[in-house]
Figure 1 (spheres, rainbow, N blue to C red):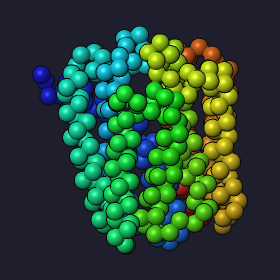
Figure 2 (cartoon, one colour):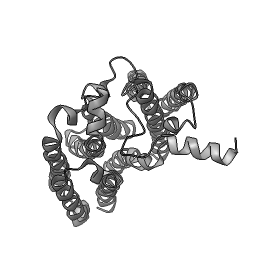
Figure 3 (cartoon, rainbow, N blue to C red):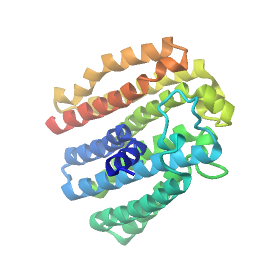
Figure 4 (cartoon, one colour):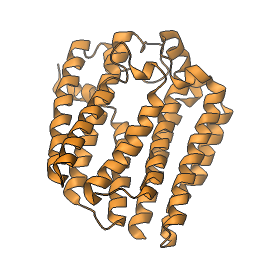
Length: 302
């Protein structure tokens, strides 16, 4: 098999478009560490590497789990995965999941070993890394995969919001002021919104496959209202933080993204056909990244 073709297959399976969104949590956490006067470049770099590995692991495991359960078929609205096309086998993907789990663990240990200040911190973050690896795999893998139980949104909020943002902040500042919960919450909500678009798009296929996502449980109409609520609450979280910690008008740079978020929310609310949401998934990921970057830039400039 042509090496370039082989690389493109695995590169597409890694879903590179999802990686900037995962890194946004680290950017926000590190920007907050800079705001607290505790920024450390090496910690941020190691957190970036660990997060990329965990996100790719999650994407590989997601494809593998859906393949085993027969959830991803040729009728799906989104792009066909390499495993659906027969370009890679289930066994190959399983081996890749194992390798990425090991690499994620090694990277997480390196991060914890570099940044810890106490032995309790070291063991806590190594344990948290193991939990993150297990969570990345069990979203679709296993008899009780939480993605099939409607718990995906909760786990994304926890890991893309609180764990990532607060974790990278703590590893640099070694304290957690309560005000940090607000941007962590906002960052997590924007990540949940990306998942929500995916689930709104795939609602019919997921229902047929027995994948009981939150959208399958509450229905597409409520799911669209839920999407608007996610975006509104995210903006409010950032706004309360900016007002509370106001130092300069730069603190409100993230508001530049609000018109784009409002336009996006209106489109999602008004369009009921899942096929119309196909290009909106990438749009939501881009908007989440832009909002987080503007928020982080505002902190750095302010």
